[in-house]
Length: 117
Image (cartoon, rainbow, N blue to C red):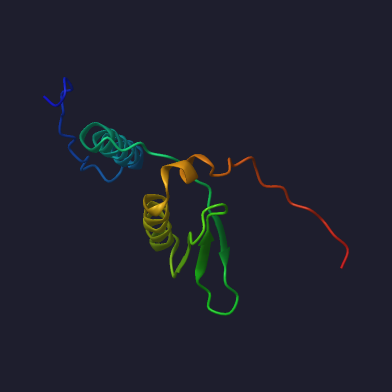
């Protein structure tokens, strides 16, 4: 029992013929981790949008989070990029003054445009 909440252990499904069970298990595991961060550490999770491109010269994936100075990274795989950009954003936000955090821009959307070249 933790702050009035019961913590249970999830057992990973062993039946490899049913990928939906494994996906559900990973999703539940992720949610539990998220809520434990909030309960234990008092951390509020926020979502940010990263733009991802592939560098034509190196073949690396490059991620940039607009509106957060210094929030950019690169990696050879998308999984590695996800880990890297999450760490970078946590570091950048952690170093910000609380008043500056409140002024971060709100993501509205992405729009593709067509131009004659």
